[in-house]
Length: 320
Image (cartoon, helix red, strand yellow):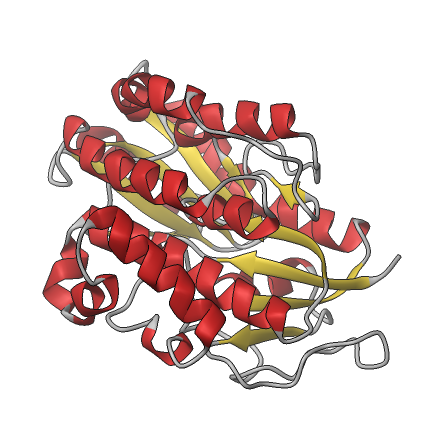
């Protein structure tokens, strides 16, 4: 079986007003309206002010709701995905989009999750940094083994052959930078980011255990590829287990890119305002067609047209 994979980006895709382009579509608008009821405010207006997006709650809810809204719009206009995946907090959007979880429960959980990030060290004490260059994932793992010395440092994500992300304390990241540069690669701090997907998230994960256990799971309409193990599945128990481990585990996005093609994807649609995941997927599969869906009204991929012609040019830039 061949077809289209849909991918939903995470926090790094958040920009002011990214949902606005979808709101003219009734199916997407219904998603935004439901989210507004859950959080008790007009979410579209909340997200239009760039200053509000400095609040992780606003940024995280925006990318999740926009991802679900765009996905539902595309589905109602004929898109039939073979498999779905989300990066970081985008995995919550993927689970709702595929039908594994309900939107209202996920919006509440994502909002609470973002607020609980206040329990983690402040960005001036800890954070994340991207390792850029050939073999980034391998270099990042070696650096963690060399310089962590028992301190909080971990590979937060392996995004592609030329990009990985480290998560840890300020001192550990400083030592990691020296080791990365010595290996001939570059390291770039990600400003204002909490040290997600690493050991510093354990207190947050512990607080989330109860709300995660309260989620009502269903068998999704299409397989979802979890960040934790990059294995496409429709098994709610497997998806729930991966979500429980999500915040303290490595995001296996390079493996996810491979899993999408192994599942039969011959093209990919990224729902977002700017290309973020597309460039990473093309690091793994340079010839795989990837298009950006940034609003409704674009042609829908079909078996006769495996390369989607959605809003936006082929993805050529962006990082997570």
